[in-house]
Length: 121
Image 1 (cartoon, helix red, strand yellow):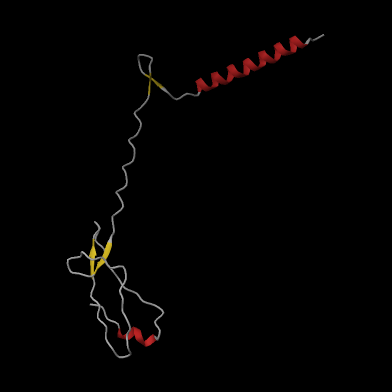
Image 2: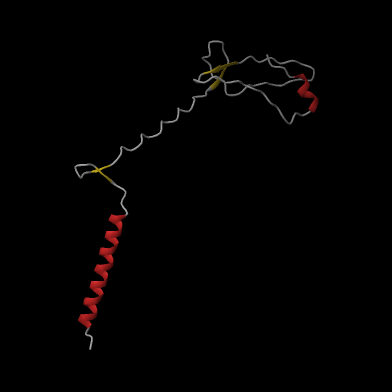
C-alpha cells in the first residue's frame, strides 16, 4: 500500500527531475562564446542611434515700429467708410532660428466684392 509520504516524495522527485531537465536544456541552448581561457565573452553592444536634430525655433512677430520694439497683437482698422482707403503699417520680423516663407489667405468676405480691394505691400 502506498502512503502519503511516498506520494509526496514521488511528487518531489518528479518536480526536481523536471526542474533539472529544464536547466540542462537551457544550458544546452545557450549561444554564448567561450574564449580559449574558458571565459564567456560577449560582443560589445551596438552604439545607440544618433539623437534627432532639435526642432527649429520658429517665431514670427509683428511690430508697429521699424525698430521692432512695439509688439502688435491686432490691427485696429477703425471705421471704414464705403469708397475710402485705410492704411496701416506693421513690421513683420522672424525672431526664430529657421528661415520661413509667409503666406496670406482670406475667407468669408462680406460683401464678396471687398476682397478685390485689399492689397498688401
